[in-house]
Image 1 (cartoon, rainbow, N blue to C red):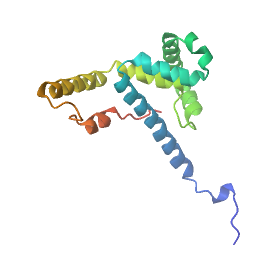
Image 2 (image 1 turned 120 degrees about the vertical axis):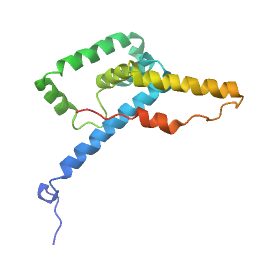
Image 3 (image 1 turned 90 degrees about the horizontal axis):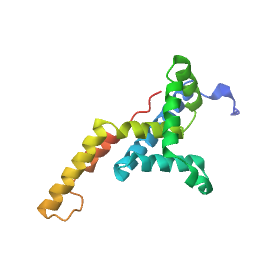
Length: 157
């Protein structure tokens, strides 16, 4: 029997598996953005990095505006809030391995305002104070696993 490469040999559920894996990849990117925000502790720094990655050219980096990029992200969010907009956004992003940069910026900005982010920053600050006050000299006294678990995100479709 000869093996041929045709659509008839691909199992029909492969598309669902591919969609699920791509959604997971997009979620992982948003989780990485949240981790970057925990490190930088400034949403404008993270959004600036995303904006520069999206722009691609260092020669225009000084002309880019984080506030304008965030405004664009909010406008995009408003434009896709209707049922038709939601459908078009999903059609646009469905096959992507990374969320659109404006969506990433919006998610960073949104999470920076959340109680969860503020609680994690406070918890980290308290753990550092406790370590510094006890004379342990740092060196990983906190439980990073709990923080990572709280940072993970699910990409909403």
